Image 1 (cartoon, rainbow, N blue to C red):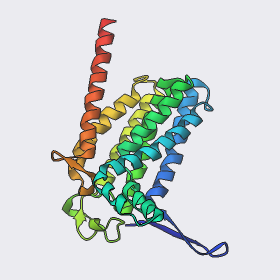
Image 2 (image 1 turned 90 degrees about the horizontal axis):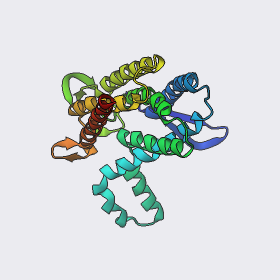
Image 3 (image 1 turned 60 degrees about the horizontal axis):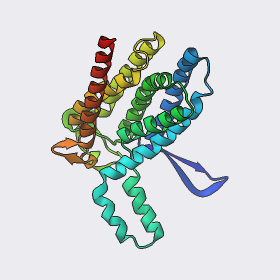
Image 4 (image 1 turned 45 degrees about the horizontal axis):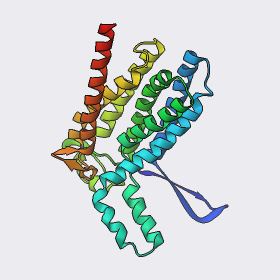
Length: 267
């Protein structure tokens, strides 16, 4: 595949090489594709886009912190290596390795927490912000999964009719044909994002689009995990970390919709 691109600027940095990973490039494309559309619909609903911009900025900070924090938690078995650091820079290098990867669920919850707290503190329209965030998250993640495929991370199980990686960033992905689970999830995310954008444009499911996204995504993600072949993500009781989180999300959203239905029935 295409792990990334190396850039040279000999006129300014003769001894430096700059590497841009395919994942980062796809994430940037996803950001500049999904955000403007959601901003457009937010303006149609509220007549204002200025109030949404700081929400997205705080959400981006939460996404970055959350995805790396959860990755570090998943790799808790390696925390003991920190005490073997020889000096400060060695310690920083080890911390970078432990927390250097990313877990989508961590970024998702980080976005919801930071964006939600900011919106609540500033008394912004939470339902409108949540609604426009749902398709944006789905489409952004879809581009991210394409980046995963190009880089060779988050790879699938072995399959004789699959795709073989030869220069993936994760060495264990190379050499055998694998299920292109990254592309399967990307296609699902794009389809879900389009569905949510259509619902948003038609003012369907007002105030609960983010809840719908969480319920649908977590349900599908649980089963997609069975197609994943990277075993460094953490397992408990035969389930991956993401499967355990998916079960919790589906349970929480099911309870939410049941309570919503009960309230409507009583009303």
